[in-house]
Length: 311
Image 1 (cartoon, helix red, strand yellow):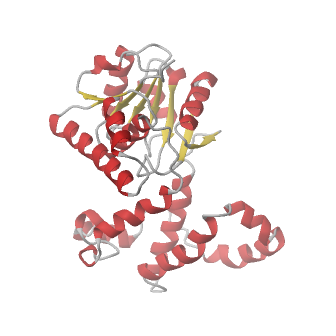
Image 2 (spheres, one colour):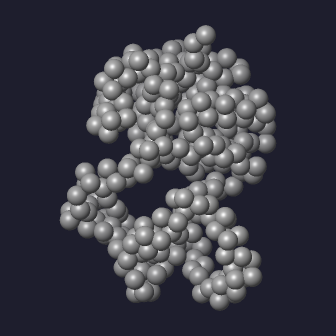
Image 3 (cartoon, one colour):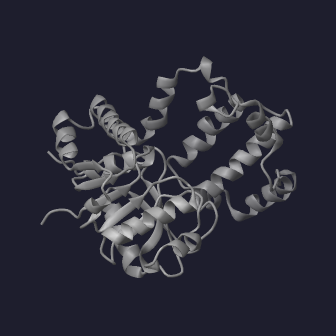
């Protein structure tokens, strides 16, 4: 029996990487886009993803060609017919998502799971713009979505147990690590951790305590190395409640407590120094090797790649 047919609605980087992952594990996949330029970029991104894997000795040209034969990129929503699971990966605008959900529901069976890749909308908002509320949930990946193993699954008040079970089963067959959140919280799980670190880091830079380079050094050569091999809360137990209580008593009162984006960020936006894409943010990216950065961004995940590749 063949593998289930997967849909991906959206031809941006997330959609392209989801399609790389699904076809790379032998699932026939339909990617729906709107413009010829977007569909062509999607195909190029998928091919580039494969070239990186081939360059690392993790795949062969035969795997790539077999996977591409499983891929359909189209602007015809009718080709979603027969998909049992669809990743929604379009713009973070509710009206855009509502239009996409309507097209999915018009072309798919009533039990087709719709998994939004949103990083900002809660399920309770998405439920308002679908007819079949029992089949909508969030399956939030991390970029690059075909490489990072973790996916956060967030169910809504009306999401069926069957939809959650189907999602977990599919994601695990795609070699993903799945966290199912019991509550629908802003930022889900990982982005809540990330925002806490970003907020404290920006605060320390604004206070003139350290530079961006020094903060990244601290993360890369202490926290990053530690938590790459053991869990955060394993370490908490290792240190022990008594010592952690004493540390918290001393540190908590001095931590950043900002509830709005900080001035450094606002000033950067006003000056057009908004990060890598602008060439200047906390770093001057004109002085960095971008190819080296892109490779470093993916390198930790190569050893985790264990796909059931088509041949």
